[in-house]
Length: 313
View 1 (cartoon, rainbow, N blue to C red):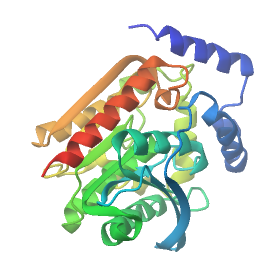
View 2: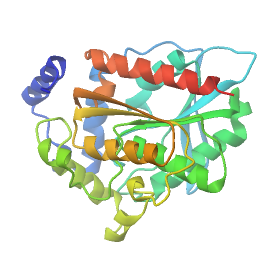
View 3: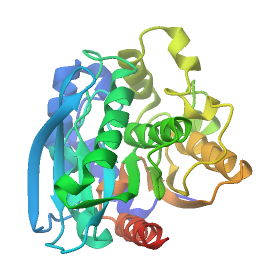
View 4: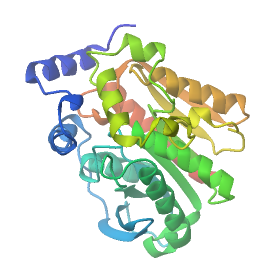
């Protein structure tokens, strides 16, 4: 299937803007460019009852969180941990503010957005450690933010999808917390970028293969890290007894095949899995709901899946 016309329009705009690719920049400049460009096509911000910034004690110091509360409620609300994308190098609370607001409102849940440490200043496994620490904090302190510790979920896109998947594995191995859903939006899951989709969509589809390699060079300490399931959850020997999963994939995404492979392995291991594949989409389309109809659909289906998962006994 060809690229969706709405996406092609976006690709044409990006081409005309002539932004440098991330691999051509240093990490600080890459972060600045991402913060400037990421919100352009994102969901229109919605007004919530309350949005608070605070820090918790993280594995290596204060860990910033942003808490989105959709409405006042006499009863505890479910809690969703959101891990942002950005190749473990770029992105943060502000660049995903609109998505977190939208999911909080439409899924009727508290969203905790996690400002995990970024590479190369903080290489693997710093992001993993921060992500799991935030999840454990939510399980232990949900009542402090009006949340229900028995109704927790994790979500993220791209690198954030990786962190959501890995946090689900770590929670299973630790015996807690129990998760209602893992929402994985075009997650990176493989140890090496050598899939068919990595080759077919290496250039011209927003996320280039060369930038993927650059992100991983910033994130990993040495080649041995590639064999760690906390970097590549597709390598995990045991994928059984994991929370239900919703995977949202883009057909013209270098990460498509590894996301699909992870979903299929989760299903083969006996987990409840739904895979929604948008064939005409590219990487990052989830953040384009102000211009792309499929992005609106993906967000809506995410919210519906979260509502259903949180309603389970």
